[in-house]
Image 1 (cartoon, rainbow, N blue to C red):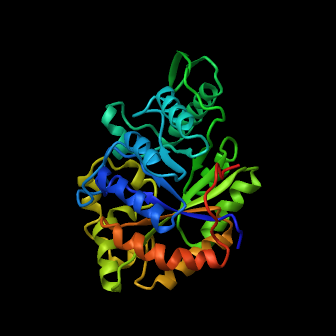
Image 2 (image 1 turned 180 degrees about the horizontal axis):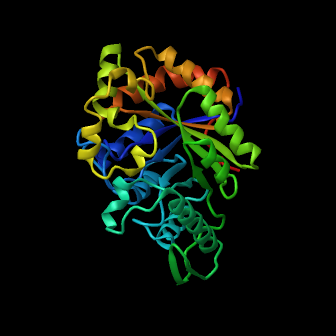
Length: 335
């Protein structure tokens, strides 16, 4: 195992009130987690999840309340103008040097349809994201930016910037997107999938010249009883089992709840690591480390986080540390 792998907690704004999420990341740091990452949604995936706080307000509070490095997965270009995202990134990175990063992706209609602009085809969204990345980088580098394309920018300049621009990471769930991210990203983040698929994604990114650290978000469900762990996963995450383009293109929680009404529990188990056995969870995590992931963010898909944080902090993280899989978080780990 590489000694540089670290484990963090994922803050799921779609499921948990932001005040409770703040308490969760504070508790996670106390329990031995080394980092955190945050979703950035306008809408949850299901009415059963029932939340969707504003990530950027929460990130400032979380960075102040902890000493953890924190990241966010964001989709600039429609709901967010790239100059505003550059300003948000620049401000947090200036206030908390070496502790903040952003992953950039093409987004989902469930969040972006609110602008009323219509939902572009995937190839247009991809081209738009690349324009946004270039705009954000130029602004973080101190340039005055004007741009006319799929996004428009008029003489924008950031007056508050960090001394060192933070990492802009590519978010991908396919080999082709991972390969494309290698053109511009400072690292790659994806979600748990069968090991051969994850290996192909890593290879696609690295073989295309992809630089920086590899990060993985792991959906899991743990409870002392296996049936309860399965119940939690099915209740909270069955609307999240759909492959693209379904997950990209549905617009409302009603749509997701309708199409997930007939999802079988076994299907949920294909995308969520479900077990009451903490040793089994540790084994899954070691397998991801052995693939080469430098950062692994644990997302317990239940709405109650305390028991998960305490159990993994007491049992799973110490086991991984004992085998050299985790080191303490110091500075910017995305080199």
